[in-house]
Amino acid sequence: MSISSSMNAGVAGLRANATRLATISDNIANSSTYGYRRAQTAFHSMVVGSGIAGQGSYAAGGVRTSTIRLVDQGGSLIGTQNSTDIALSGRGFLPVTTELGARLQDGTAPLLLATTGSFRQDATGYLRDSAGNTLMGVPANKDGTITAFPRDSTAALRPIRIEPNQQAFAETTRIDFGVNLPASGTVAGAPADPLRMSVEFFNSLGLPETIDVSLTPTVPAATVPPAAPASPSNEWTMQLTHIETGDVLGAYTLAFDNTPGQGGTLSAITPLDPADPPYDADSGTLALTVGPGVQPIDFFIGRFGENGGVAQKGTSFSPAGIAQNGSGAGNLIGLMIDANGNLDAVYDQGFRRTLYRIPILDVPNPNGLTSKDSQTYQVSRDSGPYFLWDAGDGPVGEFVGFSLQESATDVAAELTGLIQTQRAYSSNAKVIQTVDEMFQETTNIKR
Image (cartoon, rainbow, N blue to C red):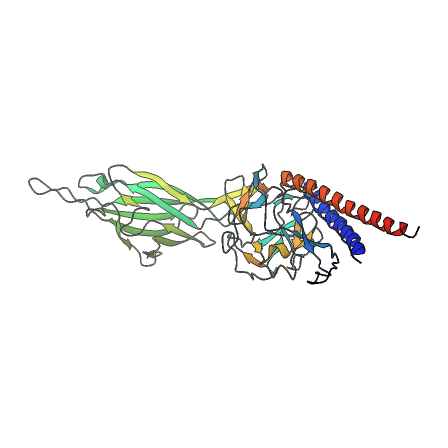
């Protein structure tokens, strides 16, 4: 009995070390595979008879193995030249689907989890890696915002597809009117000539239009000596006119503070016509409606007592702080992914538009995921349910563009394990050889 169990234990040892050799060879073969997670074989003893005290028999139970893929242990990040090479700086996975699943645009595409990926547009505009896995994300609204979506299902996820030859423009919704008016312009005797400038914006068709801004100082009448000189009025009249239609968008009296610590900031804004768009003191804006299409534009001129917007200081006029958030029609020249997972289209006019938000998936037990081809994984009973996080929230990390994650294989450690496995295999083979010789001696007794 004991001799037979010794041979069985030796055979189990050969089988166990062969399994360990398979995981080591897999790890070494994938030492240059981006996103690869190493496999590991664990040995467990099998006890058939423990040898009760007082009894002189013992039966060898042998050994059995279990393999696990250490999905929670990733490799280091390496920089690349492709903007849509994606890695994660911490815990989590990228949502991808199969090449066939990308045809499903109704939220039913099969979900796979990837550790990293080098994604590029194919001939039809899908973002795929070299294995055909298609990146998935939540489509953004036209203004780049993301509508709230369910976090425990893939209902909102869509295979990412970008039209290769698309054009886009950004309609102007806000103008920041940050100018400095000369305080010397409202003293007695100063010229009352208006200061004029043109502010460009883009309409709902992406075409440029212009708002003419006229700023006229209120100049006090000069006094005859020896009377005290008149104080500066610190007041200007601002008129906004739409050049293309000739419509006056609004006219206002702007008053500026001259007290210590608040000098030069806005103190009062009064519409000259009650029908003019009102001034919102909380936001510091005028709600203009421009053109035949009644395009709404928030015209920011500043808050009371705060810097920014229109100011009155010194002796010079400076319109350097004028900006607007629109842009004319441009051609798509590239894609970018920021740390928040926003996939932005970059246009040759210099503006960016968010097309998708890519969530980061996480499961309670990453090592319980089912391994699939091409460094992808599938949710299983052992992994627990997935949840879609925004980058940087909860336990997950952030997106790193122009990067890939290297293989988690440590070649030196695997080669060391290879030597140990070879020795252990040889030793188990020696056990079998010894048992065979003992059986031979037992057979020879009959001779």
